[in-house]
Length: 129
Image (cartoon, rainbow, N blue to C red; front, side, top):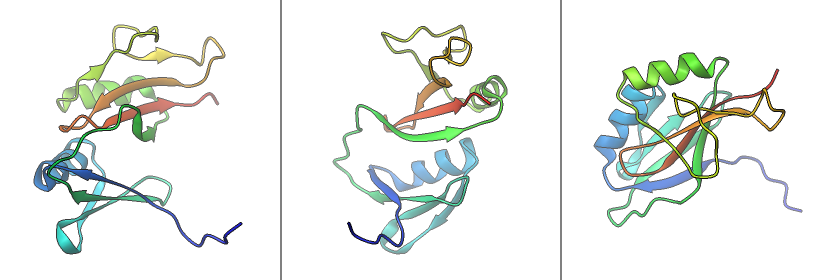
């Protein structure tokens, strides 16, 4: 097994300026411009991801980024006020805020999904204590 010394996530976006605005101003993450038109986004807990220009970008059909919160109701309300629309998925029972309530049922976290301006799927979730 290799001795990995570091890891990070990266994915392409068709519009770096729109990504900077969304991830920095809407989601409130720390975004830095990097070489070659790339963006470095610091994530809670010390990890980070790199976004790079990709004009022919096609979004993944599964969650690309998960952001853990202490209070999912407050987080969803805050993000809705910032213009985020949460997505409903078939097969998931979701309440009026589009939150799938797994904690009370012992079926995983409470989770809600949204997308960035390019269709990248992002989850906001609250784990059981």
